[in-house]
Length: 298
Image (cartoon, rainbow, N blue to C red; front, side, top):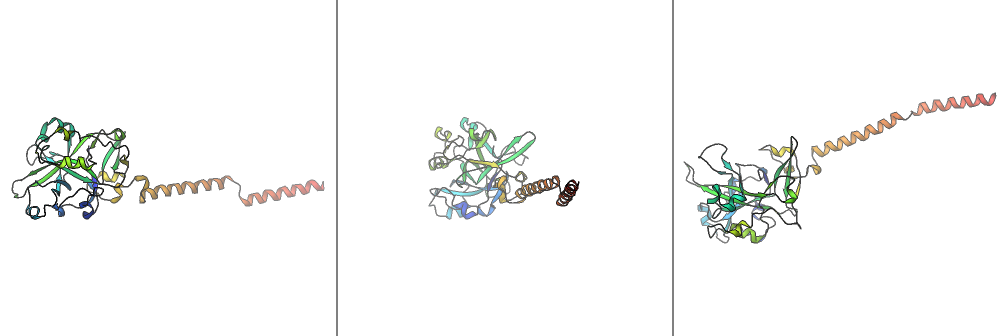
């Protein structure tokens, strides 16, 4: 699954979609509704890329249509069930359900496809009773482009549509199956990106189904490493959340360095205590000299 991810880049950087210079994206709808964060959680806002269709706003219609794509801030989690009911937001859509066309996703898969951007995503490895967070990212610093679906609805009391999205997941690759049995669908080539975002036909096809596979680029495998447990608490924020826990230059690394220093000091003290002191050695030497003189006299 994908239940937490990071996008802490500045807005200007996000607009440029780092690593994909050929991907031309127009304006950013509702840009001010997104605050860059390293701990994006469900039911919060985040940017996605889509075709110009989701409840065209005045600012969007007046903008230059040099690109058929726009970026838009949406809420993560598509509501299902009765309106206003608690705990009824789907943040992930299983690729198997999209292919089969079953469930709530059938009405979205043909015309409401989008891409969520992130620097990487978090997943928790279960070890006994412990859960260890790991961060997975592109090795070259590119943002990851995750296949998604979105919905546009007008809620009671509102005149403007509210857009929300979900991230498509598939079975985990062999390289990451040790971490979790699911992972997000990552689109890595311009051909795949354009195919997923092209909703002109308003229908689903077998070509789209072929895109729903785990990351399989063996020449550029994804990087995955353990990160601090603090990321597990919704609302906490730190750029250090996406750094390997072994390389952190904050309290954790300092703590280990301090422990090693104490161990070294203890080892030196033990060696000193195990060896006789200089004063004791001097007394022993004097006693031996006195005994030698006695032997010579006799």
